[in-house]
Amino acid sequence: MRPNLFYGLPVDLFYGLPIVLMTFVCLAAIVVSALLRNNSKVVFVFSCVGLVAVIGAACLLFPNGTAFQGMISVGVYSSFFDILFCSAALLVMIAGRSYLQRMEFEFDEFYLLILLATSGMMLMAHANHLLITFIGIEVMSVSFYVLAAYMRTKTLSVEAGLKYFLLGAFATGFLLYGMALVYGATGGAMEFGAIRSAVGREPSSLLLMAGTGLIIVGLCFKVAAFPFHSWAPDVYQGAPTVVTAFMSTAGKAAALSAFYTLMNALIPDGSPEATKIYMLLAVISAASMLFGNIVAATQTNVKRMLAYSSVAQAGYMMMGLVAGTKAGMTGMMMYLASYMFTQIGALVVASIIETKYGENLEFSDYAGLSKSQPALAGLMALFMFSMVGIPPLAMFFGKYYLFTAAIDAGFTWLAVVAAVATVISAYFYLGLIVTMYFKQQNEGQAVLQTEPGLSGITLVLSASGVIMLGLLPALLVKLTTLGL
Amino acid sequence: MQNVPLEYYLALSATLFVIGAIGVLTRRNAIIIFMCIEMMLNAVNLTLVAFSSFLGSISGQIFVFFVMTVAAAEAAVGLAIILALFRNKQTIDVNDINVMKW
Image (cartoon, rainbow over all chains, first blue to last red):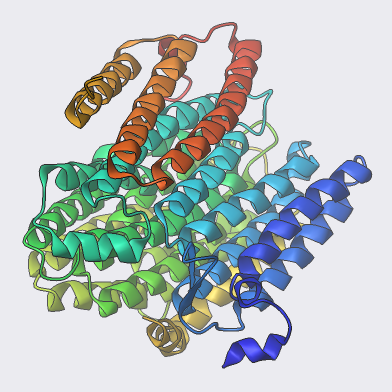
């Protein structure tokens, strides 16, 4: 038994170590920033060290189980997500420091909010109780509202914050109402195990169906899937670029981790409604892939293009939920990890090219980038190739696992739709590469001069992540299958 | 004293929820939209308390406390964002929030 390793430490504390440590790092960082006014370097270093410590704690690979009276679950599944969220936070923080310095907008609060959002995400992945899921979602979302509106003197950023806030709170209402109905329909069950057995025991009622539907609506909003995506393009475009990188990767991954655990509890195998709900999820997934990619192809702003493509990516990820199998889940986790490196890399390149006044985000500004900034153009090309799913790169394997999982689960038509959507996506991802390499810089356009600074570290880490996951996908797959 | 049946509570809270949702979709003033969202959350609270009381399960009422706390946190953040918007644009009408196309 592993708990003996920590002799004398209560089992709850040991099992909850990543979460407890993360919460402690958040609070300590707030104290540090309050004690040392205007010394963001210390807060930055402290936050980074804290995140590395949490990653270390999550690497202990806890045996599957629950802690705190069944409120949180631990295991390889949640540890995987802990590591994913903390790595995303770390990459974004490192890139964010130099980005915010360039924008002349560096405050301690950026790091604190990233930490707080990460702790919320970890709660979502660890949740074994409706209450914990709810609190996790809210801690994450409220931090995101502030982060989206972070540049408070820039209209674009504040507008993004307001849109995110109003629509996010609206969606929270639906999610919460769904939870309340499920609570009533299952006769007072809130813990996932109790919900699962109650749903399996009783014939499905209207209350339960309505509750499940409302929860799906609320979560689809959080992952920005098709009919509930309308906030995503505006928020992702308006928010500071590094924040967009964090929201569209870690935020999406957190919502999907909660989606999986909730669906696991609400749709036990063999329940009569299961096929209907899976079909509904499949339709949402297919619509997101097609809609996101088709609209992304018409965009002229790189950030907005990546925003619409992230709607499509949500569709791909949901294929894993639709399959509802272990293979589907492995594919989804693999895809989330590769998407994290790719999307963060692409947006950090965009953040380096962006000027202080929010310019240089159009496709035309990228013309001739291969001459003026060969390194940045090369990295951007790498990330775009990964997005399309060119074989040796990370997202190819993610797509491969998801497609096979969907076909094995009997959703061949969904895999066909996904393949068609991928072909459409090649148009704009490769279009950006063509612009960078084969188009001449416009006359009269100022030569781009920018210093990546610390962002360079993030770029190198993301690029190596993309290549490593592409070369050694089996390693990660083995890890994810351990605990499912 | 005759007890009010559970269905009445559920119907009332569903009605409040729908009124709130319609308000969010039709009103254009950011603060009124926010008040409608608060009404939706309170409709959920009513559902939770009603279930909790009729099922004899305490966790529904505990949940309500958390919902209220979260709603307070959301209110603080939301009003601050609305304030920041007003400082930038001198309006909180969501029709005027159109730097990016909706």
